[in-house]
Length: 313
Image 1 (cartoon, rainbow, N blue to C red):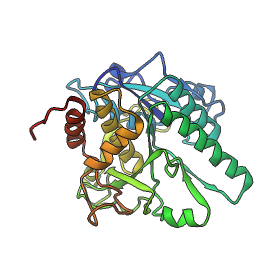
Image 2 (cartoon, one colour; image 1 turned 60 degrees about the horizontal axis):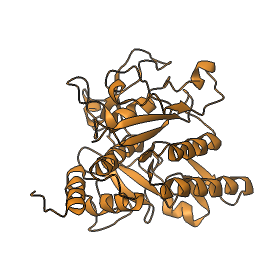
Image 3 (cartoon, rainbow, N blue to C red; image 1 turned 30 degrees about the vertical axis):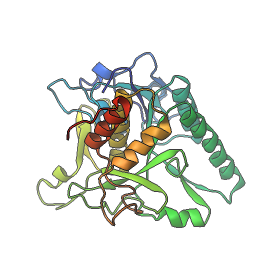
């Protein structure tokens, strides 16, 4: 990846003190939109007092420093845009402000391992949906590749759509919705799914063998915030969920932008879709979408499209 490419992590914050995060952390652009917290006013800072945001940041861009873990795109910059409290909740307005801000400062990728359900039969919630439509479309037109978690409730999002509900931001048209797969290339059955909704799948982990010893080795591993107020001092953690899958896709999008910064969001999206490794039923399906995100093939195709030269496989 390239240090000129910026990935915004919209989450519980990012711990810039972590040795795997610090080399790629953008201090100038990182900020917080959290103005209310059950913890205390220190939670208004961009610091991650939960761990979730730091986990996602590490999956995208943990530094290549011969220590700890390594991200999908270990040279790109992390822009920490805090929109959730240490307890993991936030207002839709914070998320909208975060997306708008990230677009204004011209980040290349926006990674959102978060989401909530909106009932479009409710007038107030319908206003939120239309506001989210506007702000994500604004970011998309400014070149931001938007990636979001599909959710972990085993819900058919296509059915939800038919009865007037939306899982947001994953179900927004300008957002890439990511489902989860296991380390056995199986669909993670906790993941939401839905034909016409899921676009890509990525590593998310699964609890195979629980509670037998070493069951956690089937989970996904990344950085954690030692400032986590519930259990401080941990620098790494195992996790599973579509939250883990999302930054893998965001990282590959960052690699594509590193090869060709001039690509539009829709062009990056097309490359991700066309190079995905097909899983499940042949072709597109509602569980894996176009398939498992494939960093290697995506980079090869981007190189060929950008230079006109055939790259040997």
